[in-house]
Structures are given as C-alpha cells and as structure tokens.
Length: 511
Image 1: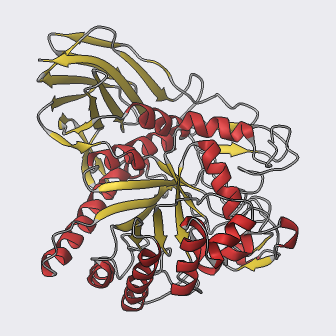
Image 2 (image 1 turned 30 degrees about the vertical axis):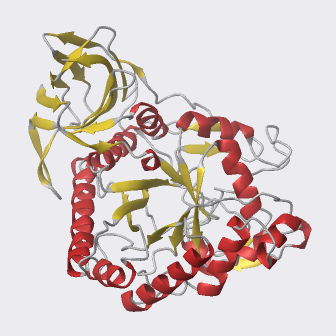
Image 3 (image 1 turned 120 degrees about the vertical axis):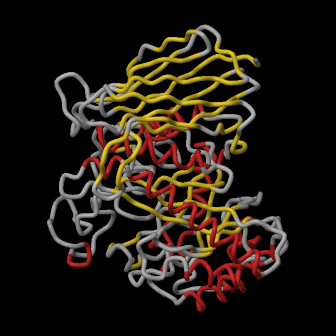
C-alpha cells in the first residue's frame, strides 16, 4: 500500500483561481468545427446549424474561454473569407492541414456559438501570411461600434452590436518550421510588437498574448522567449506555452508523471519573462497563457481511414484527423496536468485544452449520430466546477516510485482550493501508481472540517484495464463513481485505487 500525507493551511495560498484556466480550443482542423460543433441537418441542430447535443456537453464540461480559429490553421487564414453571405464565401485550400475549407463557418458563427455556450472568445490573428493591416481591420470589425468601414460592414453582415472580443493571440507557434510564415524570434518579435501597437490604437482594452515556444523541446526554447519579450514586453500581457504528452514504448510510469515536465516548463518560462522585465526595468509582470495542452498520440498525424501522413492525402473537407480515443490512463494524466496548472495559477492565468470536439478532444461526435464524453472529460469538468476561491499551497509527503524520464516522483499528485464564500475545500488527487492503492491523509490547518464530505473517483472499471475507453457504443464505460472519505480529528482520510483520479468536496469553517 502506498501512503501520502498532505498538509494545507488557509494562510498559505498561491492566489485566486483564474477562471480562464479552464479554457478550450476550437480550430478549423479535422471535424472539430464541421460535424463537431456545427452540423446543419443533424437531428439536434438548432436554427443556426449548431449541434445542441454538443452544446449540452460543453455546458456540463464548463470551459470558460475558447481559442479560435487556430492553431496552425490561422497562419494561412483570411478572416474576411468567413464573413458575409455564406453562399458568397470562397472555398480555399488550407495548407496547414491539407484540406479544403468551405468557410461556411466563420467569425459571426463562432461568436454566436460562444454566446450560446456561455464562453469568452479568445481570437487568434494571422501573423504568418498576414500582418498589421489585417489585424487592426479585424479589431475594428469585431469591436468598433459603427460609423467606419469595417464596423459598418459587420453591421451590414447582421451584427449590429460589437462582438467586444478582449483576448487576442498574436499568431500561433511562429517558432515552428512547420508553420506557414515561420519566422525567427527577432522577425516575429518586431512584427508582434507593431501589430500589438496598431491593434491597441483601435481598441486600448485588448489583452494580448505573444507566441512563446511551440514546446519546451524546441532548440530555441528560452532564447525565443527572451528575444520575443525584449521586443514586446510593454505591448503584451501574456506569453504562450504549448505542450502535448503521450505514452512512449509502454513507459506508463513516465507518461503518468508528465505534469513534472509541465511544472518545470511553467517555472522556466516565468523566470525568463521576469528576467526580461528586470533587464528592461519594467514595472509590469508578464503572465502565462498555456493555450494548448493535452494528451496527444502523435502518430505522424495519421487519418483513421488512410494510414498516410496528412500531406499525402487527397484534398478533402473536414476529414477524420487525430481523433484519439482516451482511456483511463489518459484521464489520470489529464487530471495531473490540471493540478499543475492550478498549482501555478499565480502566473498561468489562461489555459486551453486542445481541442474541444473530435480532434484530440474530451467530447466526441458522429455525423448525424450521437455525441459522448471521453474519459478525459471528467477530470476537466469536475475541476472546472469545483476549483473556486483561493488556490492552497500543498505540502506533500508521498511514497515515490521511479520513472525513466523524471527520476523518482511522488506517487500521489494533488492540488487544492478553498472557496471561503461557500465554506468548501476541494481536493484534486491522482494515484500515479499502476499496481497499489494509496492511503491518503490530509491535515487541515486554520480550517475545521465539517460533516458531509463527499468524493468521486475515476479508475479502471470492473472487468476493464488501464486502456479501457468510452465509445459511441458504450459511452459511459469510464466515468466517476462515489469514493468513501472519512473525517476525524481534523484529518481527512481516503484510499485511492491504483491508477485513479479523484475529487473531494469538504465542508469547512474557520478554525
């Protein structure tokens, strides 16, 4: 039996839970948009062609902000293609994902979807093939009340009131050679600086995200952030991070410890940003936007129906691309990645799980058919719902186990929040151990546990194994079940099954 002791104290907090931490991502890639969130003719479609069965799952999942329209897609995208009468919109070749983009779904449709979903729009602009002029025109179109060319065109296209989009990404992964319009750090930094200035001259309320490294393994990681921020520091509010994880060669122990890498990644980017700020003698602080993260099995970006790379496929509209099916192990990893984001909530103010539907997504759907929750849906939904108030520092004394990539790691991973207004502590726990249950004791300081504690757990279902997943035929195979939790002498005790993620709701009062 593995053991872990966790201490939390109401006086030792990280900061307020950022509501934008529970974001998602919709890109014109595969079936995320078409037959994902948008499918005219589907039995559940509303008058705007939006799938209400997917909207219901989105509401349950609880994302607060959604990044759009990319991703790699945005670096070759002309936003003007997606406005005006649908029948007049051009069909284009999208080089990022080697598909034909019909542009039936564009800015107006997405804003309409976002309002029905109750999420904030995080708009990405093209700094690959476009630049300053296109960006400031888009801001004017989206946010200016009227009386100018672009704002009056929006009104003519059916949106009398501004979209009032506050959060904007200055391009996407511009350090990546795969990116259309790939740039050096200096080239991108200067372009982002001038674009940011021009956008804010149209609307000074904007919050802007500069592109950081595509991942921490890039050869320019660190140097890229330093150079980009040396140009943009006073013009932007955030620097982005992207990270995807997968199991390699059956090394489940390292995969389950992926959040160790996330912790290091966040700390290094924050330190680099602070070093640039110190060098510039700036009084502002750059925060972090972890605007792409997830488990992603990158098998050469294969399609399900043809085992070839995307660029070798025929030009098609919204083909099936990277529709990963997530199992119990993946869900536990997603839970630990959410823990890492929470633990760093003082600096990570925005995070977007990529993507929302069908493409490496917690929600799956079939054309003309059902929509269902993947295993990874549940840790996100419960964390988004319960993580409120203050993020509590956690002191963990846990048995450890070895991993090939990260050395010895804590077997039990945890984050915690305290919602003073509602008198509740929420604990989010994962047992990374594959074989042994974990006895967990949580000591409260400055807080007194009341009665009525509850816990839910996601683990291997009866008769299954760690690869068990939900499917259209069996959409509830992996889910949450009740877990026994006890409170005695100011301590919370529970036993986590092997390979599991759990959330605990604990009524508390001040002590």
